[in-house]
Image (tube, rainbow, N blue to C red; front, side, top):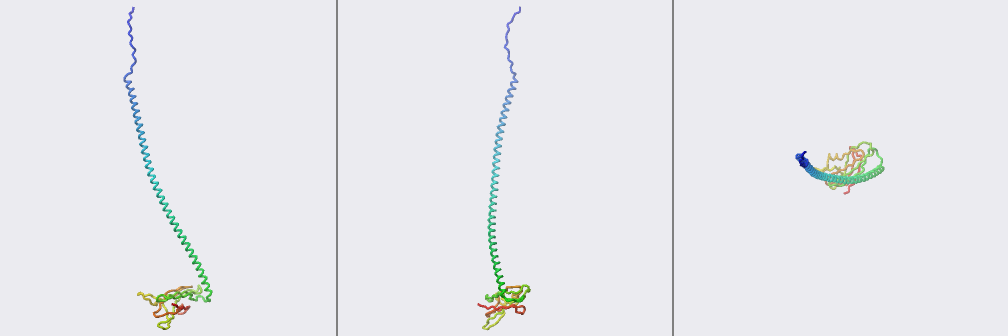
Length: 258
């Protein structure tokens, strides 16, 4: 017979987690935590950097906008100054044009008046030419003569005309024969053009006076000057002669009234 021994029951042991595995799991958690912290730090830094960069760019854009605005204002001011200058030039040009128009209108009025006067004078000349007796071509006539006292001499103005336009030039001279009294006696003297000496005195000229009295014209000529009057001589009349060499071609007598 087998003897039975009391059985001693041993509690069943639970499998324990080894220490190295637990340590590895805790390391991974810490690593993840640190990674998360780093990521958060990087995110915050990136956000801060982005905000700082955005703020810098906004300030830069604001600075550029101010510069552009300043340049634009300067350009506008320059354009306004140019417009004012052009307006001033335009106003000045308008004024000049108005003055030129007024001057042109005045000149046109004067020209019209001169043309009217010329037509009237031509009509008068044609009328007086009809009153003259017909003469041969080249005949001379003293159409006008005027003598007046001027200082120590006599100022003369003479107008000569010729009949016919195709008779060639006339070459001759004028002669002035004055009739009057000198020292109580009647005398007739030939008057010469007045000559002013270097000392300021006046005297009748000789050769120069003859040159002044020479004539050379086709249809008409005006001659004027001053004749010397000898001292003590009182002229009463002057006979104007047109000489062709020694031949008298025309004469006219002028009574003097002083």
